[in-house]
Image (cartoon, rainbow, N blue to C red; front, side, top):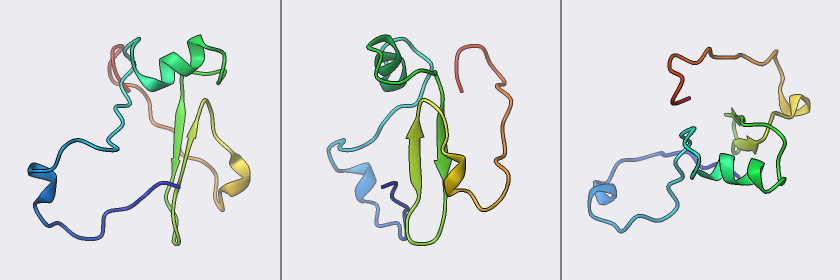
Length: 81
């Protein structure tokens, strides 16, 4: 399940890091590690935002959860998403 923020309390500035996932293309990040270990096939991820909770897919996308055609974004840099 992918969570959505509904309010801002300022706690983010003072709490210990917990649950923040970097989505860089660096070779030590989650996506690259999963690819190198054969857990997922592609260096890609998809976010689906919807009422009731969103989804995060690693290694591709599941078109069956979309009500409309998926939208793609071109990479602006060779070193990041």
